[in-house]
Image 1 (tube, helix red, strand yellow):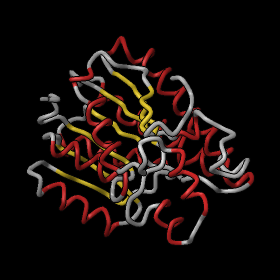
Image 2 (tube, helix red, strand yellow; image 1 turned 60 degrees about the vertical axis):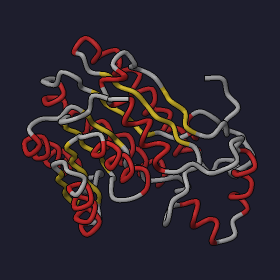
Image 3 (cartoon, rainbow, N blue to C red; image 1 turned 135 degrees about the vertical axis):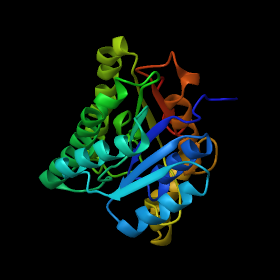
Length: 258
């Protein structure tokens, strides 16, 4: 299936490992020129080299998404270097489990404002695109509470912020629709990759691992490419009439009706 992504221009935040790296690779494999950012300079350099080997234009910069001025400057620079922007993928997260008020502040600064600032900085480019698309990476913590994998309250702030992002994308789908710009959310479940949170829990003997696996009806943890392929589709002209959607990618872990 031709997704119509060849020669499109995309940026992905937090794209040196895990889901973000897989998203950038999937877009590059479909012919997108890709700009990435992350905090680790060496990781950015390695990821850019990997993307360039896939035959596309690739650029990257070490950026802390919590630094609004730096994020804006990078997006503006990436848009100029790539010759425009068609796709914005907001992937960076402070991750779950930060306790107390500090967690609320951190998730708001990184997850919420990181996404809002990225969209606003990219908007002048997206408005010139013939196929503008925004994809937000959220979490099943946004859509389900009270299950037996995590302790009560463990994901309280994290889940609330991811729910806010899902709402934000739905609102953008309405406000930006008349401009031809689509906005969607992907909501991953438990995604396992080297160095990721689920591998670290497994190595530590955390009982959450067995509990999570027992609830995933497909019988395995997700992989970054499971999410990346969904993002590539939603970001592409092939999904040109899909906007305001929340695509849950969790192997039938959650019990809700979407």
